[in-house]
Image (cartoon, rainbow, N blue to C red; front, side, top):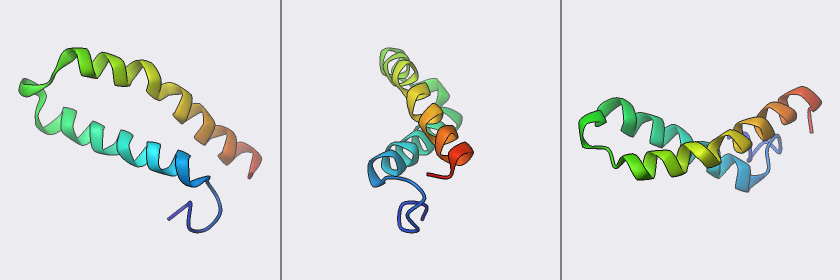
Length: 60
């Protein structure tokens, strides 16, 4: 939605959508998680969140 409205670049919107899906996986399947995968995703995710905050702050 934000990418369609021109608020976010499509690539960032897609990465944020995957982060939301990953959050749902953690919440609903905690006992079945691959902890190495969790670590890999957690290590790369903060940059996407920071990029999103910059867009919110700057409006671009």
